[in-house]
Length: 62
Image (cartoon, rainbow, N blue to C red; front, side, top):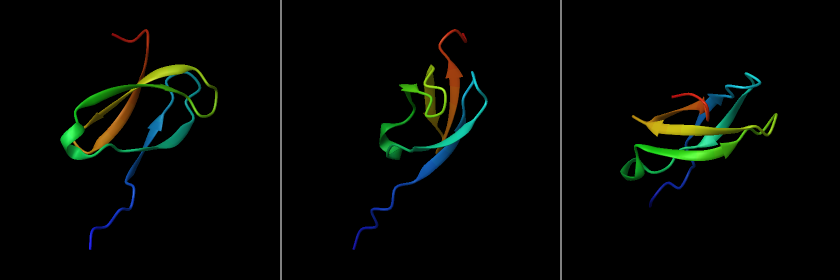
């Protein structure tokens, strides 16, 4: 029987510095970047998924 529990990772908003959990995509869909709005301050960011984890960067970050 297949286990369908969703894996999550904690990310920190680059604007308000609050942390929140995001769902990780399946490993075959990484690396990936996803547009996302902070769940605390609603500011836009990119969440980068790679190597089984996630981190956020601001849209102005290069």
